[in-house]
Image: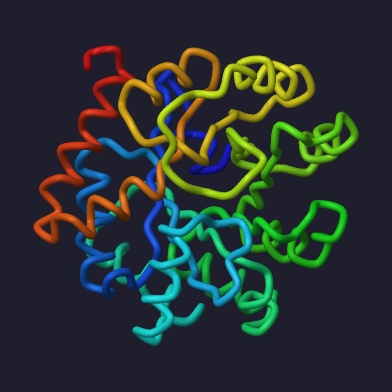
Length: 260
């Protein structure tokens, strides 16, 4: 069992927090990751900034743009992961990024260097499973879970394909659109999660649109974890002390544990 799969163990609903590396700057990313772990995140996604983030909404797009302006590259993201390990961060780290920066870095080198830096998983939103052979092989060689996304519009054939190929967990998007905080939980979401669960044995985590503790608690009644991104970046933007980030994350943790 991988580090990522273990994060879903013991009946605990996993809380996964997303940060764009280098937004608003590298030091804040390092501090925010420590805050997320302390407040109860089980896995931290580190977003690799890219100039054409087609799966992301305005908040993460803006964060990626700012990070690129700060000179953040794939190599810088790997160094950031390594620095987090040197600072004592223990939770599994997952890179979430687009295929082109990985291809430019070199598939084999990217997986090798990411693993050496302490990264356990990889999410590539613009790489469909039927085209991921080379990356899948390199990731497997270096002990990295390649995590696939499914949307409510995914066909039964695509669900079966992802169920067969995914490692760590399966990322379910709550909507067929882009990332970004939303106020409600879609009514079709429980049926979507159940449809995937009938074919998949891996944990199922829901992202895209989660922005409140109540939403997270509602989703956790049928999913194994929740993923929060845009909301966390907004909190970092609004409060550079990261106090709001810690308070919000701890509140979500408590809600998932049934104590909030």
